[in-house]
Image (cartoon, rainbow, N blue to C red; front, side):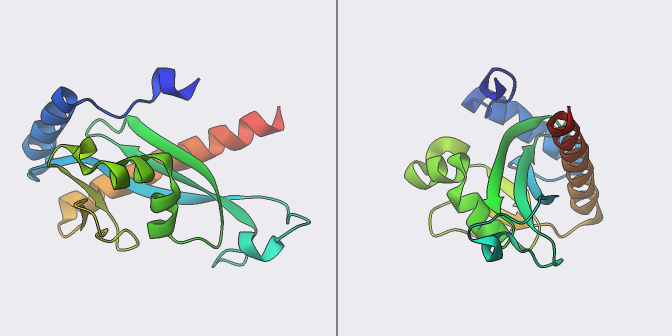
Amino acid sequence: MSPQYIQWPSELEQEYISAMFEDLYGYPGVVGCIDGCHLNITAPIEQAQRYFDRKKNYSILLQGFCDHRLLFRDISVGQPGSVGDKRTFARSPLGQQISRDPNVVYDHHLIGDGGYTLTDKEVLFEDFESDIDLQHLINVSKQNGRLKRDFIAQGLK
């Protein structure tokens, strides 16, 4: 169901998103911001240590990319809580797609916090440097928090 509603932007959409990021935030060439959060779980019977995160909880990771309007353009859920941001991205379908074909981002780049670093391909994380970037990442984090609440609520129904 998610591909029907959550889609990575086409080349034309990326041009528009990039222009909007520059107009709204003064940051050229950006097609999305990334952040992640932990979804707490009950310790699994097998390989529990893989799910034990830095906050001493058992969790899986939710990673999301948002565009300039805070619309999700990609979501990945399920990596064990002990996995870092860079590896979570590398293992995600989007990360694998970009690894195979860096043109997926059409000469644009992605903004993430310090957990997301430059890859060995031509993509393109830039650590945020300005208050504007930080505010947008905070907003992305809030969107991930909303998604986390919705995700948990759906699991409880």
